[in-house]
Image 1 (tube, rainbow, N blue to C red):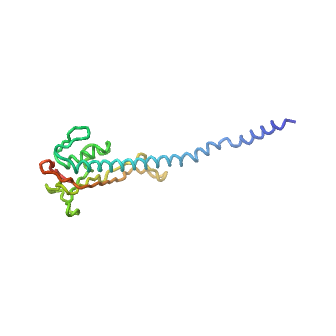
Image 2 (tube, rainbow, N blue to C red; image 1 turned 90 degrees about the vertical axis):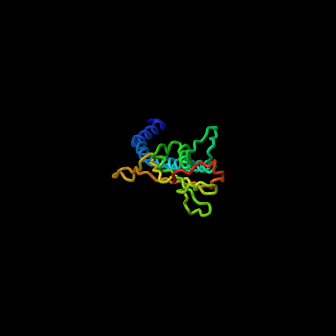
Image 3 (tube, rainbow, N blue to C red; image 1 turned 45 degrees about the vertical axis):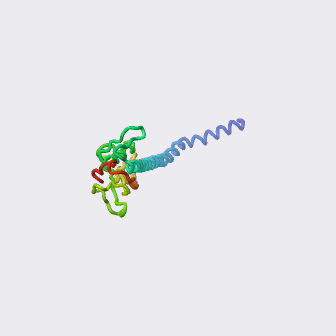
Length: 190
């Protein structure tokens, strides 16, 4: 008769022999939900990054735009070229948007509106006096198409959803009162 230790080892081997594919089945059942959680987390983080970057870009452009004069300087001491206020502010948004709004196509999403200080619902963007001190400058990025990092699958039968999500951000502030000799012309707005 065999010692009890050898009998127990033999029983253990027989029991393990019937479970050879268990780890593989567990892995395949857990891997797909895990992968879906990773994809959803990445796409959510991407959406938050794009939204917050655009919001920061328009906020910084408004902060600089409401105090902009023909002799304004960047923090590094270089002069800001102010052909007109609207184009300069749009350029500042592009500068702060870390490449999301590059080129003419990116610039087309940026809008700069001016509103009357006495009646904020009145749009004075088309007037030469729209950038007078006290008026409200509103900078926005409207309808920016943010594509997902990874296409979304809703079923195995259909094609993946690659449609972009529309992102819009706004920021506004009152233009600082300055002399007309140092205020750049308004330019084409919005």
